[in-house]
Image 1 (cartoon, rainbow, N blue to C red):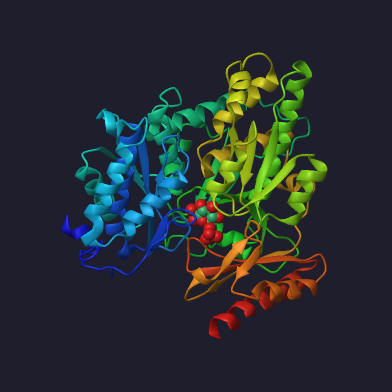
Image 2: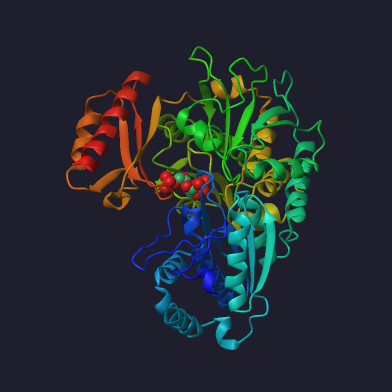
Length: 550
Ligand code: G16
């Protein structure tokens, strides 16, 4: 349809916002993400790519319309593979080619991709057996969402693929439903099916979780919903969980999306979100991002300026999971020493230095550092039987191998450790980081250890001072990295400047990388004191500013 061409490209306000042929788009850290006005032609074309992938595999593919932590004015689209994981990287390239075709070349680009697909061995397109091909589409609560949902519907309709609009959902719910469609034994492929599967596992695991004597655990917390889709959907999920097991007070349920609240804000500013006060009595708080795929716990920081937050971020959640799973695996191995199940943790360069040391020295586990982006972490974590992955920003989950499946999930009743492991693996949303599922898993573990927030803070490690700064730039594509994004190879000479700055501070580490979701460059720095960390961060920010002005 004409309204979804580059030449017309209608916006959600009904106007036209033409996209010049020369404008190129790339599939970033988490799909295509731009100002919402640019997106309808792009979503239309992505839905075509999704429907082609669905026909090639005769399966269900997901399309999620969200710009997650970005401001309300942005939107985005990402595709989900049949396993519920992020889109296969080869298909990211196909999607990019289709999106970047001119209107005049689109038909030829589509025909060429279809021909290529029909020649692939095992492609259902070749046999014509594509009746299970389906595109399932969800959206967050941005005002531009419904218009883009129609663009997705139109994209799938052109190629006659079943289309299902599952409405306003968190990104992880969409991933879960896609997997459920393709693996019917997993769960019922509906939003209610997701609530039931996760809450049933939580209730069962709760029942066999015994609080130790003298426990300081409290089943109460306050959740900052970032004014996003997490608010209504988490309320729905909690309908399935009795208040005695978990009592949640909701804040930031409606208002400007991600503005002065949400996991991204809390992590980067290290501040309490709006509507939280330092003098709040309840010390346990958690925050979601705009599409509820990230979770960070926090509380007011004592002995700091008002409004400062102490974070229990993705690194601390990963370590908590690792402690618990390791303990259960040890108990299990004592009864079955011959069945080896290996476990590792995957992080990115943003992981706090203390967390990586804790993983290696105290937990005695492998820590692998990979590039930013869940797809990279997920892939690496899949190398382990139990692969825990978390970005410091709160995005993460645990993946379990077929080996784990065959000896733990298929025989869950042999002993308590086995039952706990099997149930824990079902509370977790294995397809992708999920703020709801992660929160339930954290609560189970805190209860198991009888921990308050004080305990969690004291019994693990203390973060080294760290700072993250966003620096707006005109063209972030001039920055190129290597070494899991910890070294800049372009622009020429810039890494030398970074190294010189880092050398001026004790126990320091820093890197600069271009964002894959916003038009900014991110600076990350650690050093021995808060003041030195800030000084290092500022000086690196200046390096970028000088370069971009020059
Ligand atoms: C997305 C990705 C995350 C990534 C974040 C920031 O999160 O899913 O893996 O850490 O963007 O990426 P970048 O530093 O490249 O901007 P979300 O929650 O926005 O989907």
